Amino acid sequence: MAEETTNTQQPLVGIIMGSQSDLRVMDAAAEILETLGVSFELTIVSAHRTPHRMLEYAENARKRGLKVIIAGAGGAAHLPGMVASLTTLPVIGVPVKSSNSIDGWDSVLSILQMPGGIPVATVALDGALNAGILAAEIIGTNNAAVADKLEKYKISLNDKVMRSVEELKR
Ligand code: RP5
Image (cartoon, rainbow, N blue to C red):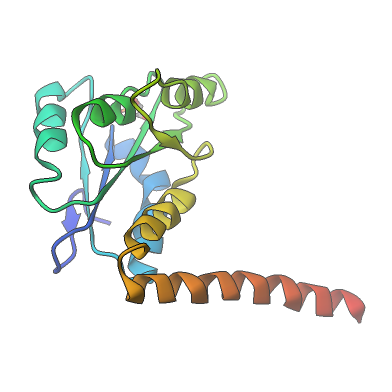
């Protein structure tokens, strides 16, 4: 996937990440949003290396029509929390296990342990798939087509397990 992509429609979800190296994880959010028919944009915004870009992105996100932000980062992962402090949009944080990290605990704790008043909906380590689904569920509260696709997705999960159950009976 390109460094910066946008669907043809007005993006409803902004996927941002601290580094190009996070893309191998964050791609899963983009893929599931595509499957669920949710328009999104994807780009790199670093809290530490491009702080002014982060400020500008977070402050303008609502005005630009975004409804949810998915922010992924690793190590001292300040991006989701800082973005959450600058916008009233819901922010979903994805802790990314970066190569030099202490088993990813640094990423998890720096995204999860937000102070009262500034929530970040934190998913599992490298849990970009769930971040995408959660973003779609938020969009689906007000979008019947997306809610319908989510319903079908859940049925497909159920069917997959039931196929395994049938296979084990043989
Ligand atoms: C964080 O540092 C990024 O989100 C990434 O997970 C980690 C390593 O970044 P690179 O050194 O690979 O650019 O800011």
